[in-house]
Length: 207
Image (cartoon, rainbow, N blue to C red; front, side):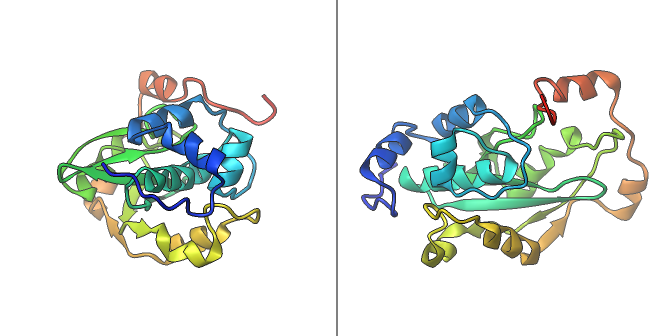
C-alpha cells in the first residue's frame, strides 16, 4: 500500500521508526513487545513511541497513527462491556475484509487477521474470550468506526497533552448490540483452562 508523504507532525526520526513497522502486523509486533502499563493515562502516539509502553486505549490510538503513516486510514473501533472495562482496537481493511491491531492485558483481545467481512464479524471474534474476573462473558456492543483525522486540529498524534478528547468522543459514537437479551441470560461463565490461558503474562499493579 502506498505510503503517505505527510509526516503528520512527527519528526523525521519518528516517521522512520513508524515506517519501519511497514504494515499492520509489524505494528502489532511492536505493541506486543511493549510492556503493558496500568496507569490512568491517555498518552499520544508520540508519547507511546518515546515511552515504549502503553495500555489498551493508548495502544489502539498509537496503532491508528502508525497505520496512517503507512498509508491506511486511522480508524478506531470501540467495544462496550457490561460489568467490565471497555476495549478499543485499531481496525484496517485488506481485500475488502477487516482486521485489527490492539494492545491488551489479556491474550486474545489483540491482533486479528484481515479475514472478517463485516465489523460485526470482527467484533464477535472477541466475544468468547472477553470476560471479567468473575468469569462472565461481558462484551455487548461495538461502535461505528471512528476516523481519528477528525482530531487533526488537536494534534492527537503528537501532542504532549492527554488525548482524553478521543475517549469522550467514543462515548458518544453509535454502538450496535451483539446479543439479544435472551442470549445474554443464557451465557455461561468461562472455564478454568480458558481463564488461565487468557491471563497468561497479565500485568498486575505493583508487579
